[in-house]
Length: 336
Image 1 (cartoon, rainbow, N blue to C red):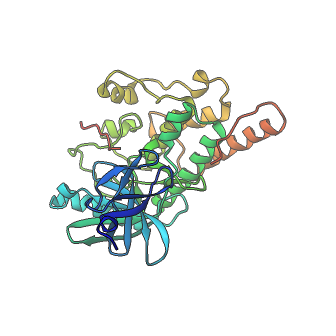
Image 2: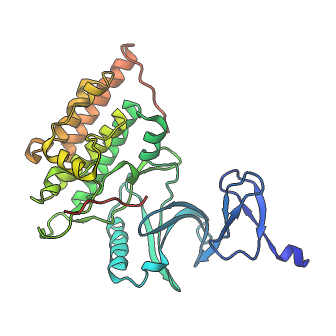
Image 3: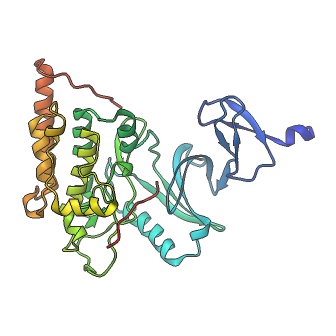
């Protein structure tokens, strides 16, 4: 082999799929540009049997890579903890807690965790691959996600949250960015980094973490958090997808948070008249300021969404409506 050949490595561009040569002198995870399309191409890196090939997403705790499991011959996602955090005991404990929380759960619409390990200085989490974008991406692209798609997503994620609750877990950070889709269009709930046991003692002096646009009023007021808080956040997420904007809009985070507590919710149908009444009513109830007025179980919430979906399909089949279907970050927080 010539010296020139040794200085090059052939890889596949994640953007255009072309097989191209990149400089062999690049360090693992270092990037250059694809000679065909100009997209970023990464020098692969091995972690045990996993070959990290390209970046999927990056967040506060680490970066998620598309990887190849050379032992089992399948694609996976590897979440690599940021190197600057590996000696931070609190960060490492949070990273491990996310792995343990996901590993307890076995549901089609919750991302599956395969292993949590360390290789040298690298701590990493290996998960099921869901790289067809997030609900946040769909909102960004479509502005308003078709009602049928929103209901399908809501039904499945409500079922996933119900399964987590049976294991005693609250998610506490439901938002569009934490609902990913796999290649088959199935929604997958991710990021259990804030999850806690439903029966854990509440520390009323602890800071409140979550995403202001979807956080439940009782969490803002620190009067307690239950699965009804996650129900509220899921409904707020579905509201955003359906209407094209968050339930409460304001100039500052503080004003958004205050609105969650004090401002009356505008029913989705008032903003978008094409939305069916049952869907609008279900989301309004799930976002009641008083948790006691929300659906008192995920089964009840899911059945309301399923009833809305059935009526929407009947309208479609009888020709009274023609909804279309697509078919297929860094955490923000508010601290009191």
